[in-house]
Length: 119
Length: 111
Image 1 (cartoon, rainbow over the protein chains, first blue to last red):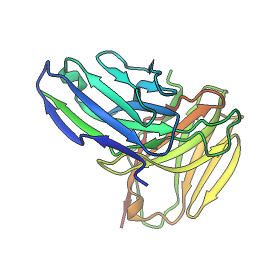
Image 2 (cartoon, rainbow over the protein chains, first blue to last red):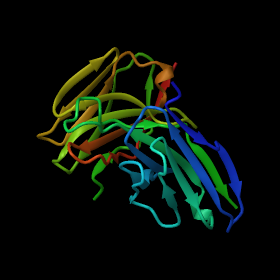
Image 3 (cartoon, rainbow over the protein chains, first blue to last red):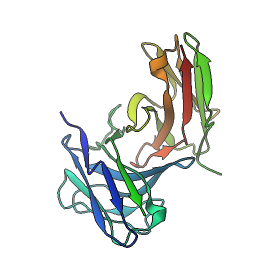
Image 4 (cartoon, chains in turn red, purple):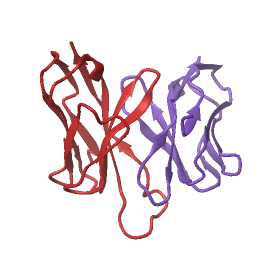
């Protein structure tokens, strides 16, 4: 059981370059999230998805785009990387099946993180 | 004002000590409360969760929720050097799958 897998784990970009981070989950989770984690700032939500084909903005969406074409995958794109996007990016997923939530259904499972440096 | 407040520490204790980690929050709609542990250069891993108020115990770990005071705690008994990590609290309303995190408390357990 792999859980949440992020690729790549490390990447160095030059300012203005583009890239895509891939998140894959094998738990049949409905909801998926992209966070960034910076020292002293905690986890900040970039974008999230409540199901296949849907996306929504989080707290810090500027400079990022996302797509959820398949239920198990959630892609985070940087069209023109900036040094301010140097961060550790975490993907997470959660289950929200059925009308009533059972205890334990509403928790996040995280990937191992993708460390991005923009020069 | 942030929705979830957590003292960043660092907190340094000797091995075997009882550790108390805390978060306060302002949104009375929060129903799910979680504690995550994050080792250096790793992703957060779920440690404990509780729904609504009360206590929950799992081995050396006890999570408490006091909704009247909007205050949650994580207690670690007989702390070990392997408990050295950053501890993040998180919470969520019942009917909206969005999570609100504290900034994390860094714990160092000295042998």
